[in-house]
Length: 198
Image 1: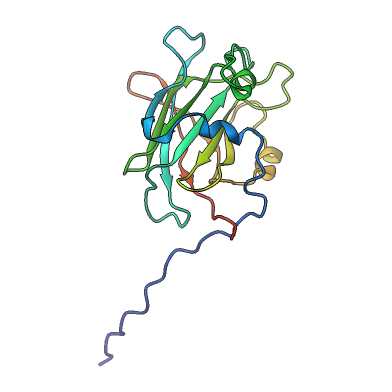
Image 2: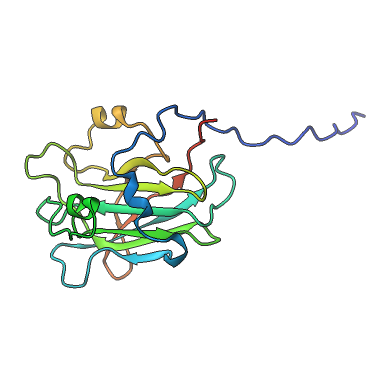
């Protein structure tokens, strides 16, 4: 009778290769405009009177090997309004002026979760890009970096060519919109942290 085999060595999940250009990032300075310790995991980007259809963007941030939730990670988000414009930023900073008023910061808790309560962005008026949400990541003690934009499957501009050009920074940014029980648009975008260059 065959003897049961001894368990093999445990195998750790493989880390993706580090991107040499990970920190080449326009707008990453905006991640640090808020003190991380003051941030919550759930943030309102759009006020109740903001024109447009309400949307919740939420997800979990995972370690680079995908094995566990990542706590204390800052997610900075900004996007266009319902006219496709980065409008009505303040004079607080250059990034506020450029990114408009629909921007904000969340910080993951022990469960790695983040949530932005906002509206669904519109494509740029010149239709050069699909509707999208820009996301930037700030890990404790590391330079910030951008990840693939959140875009909406089946909508304008999210073509096979668009998908092929995606870098998959932080995982796949193409999401399928659903709805909450209350009928609010729901976008689920999980983020896998990037491997850092040595």
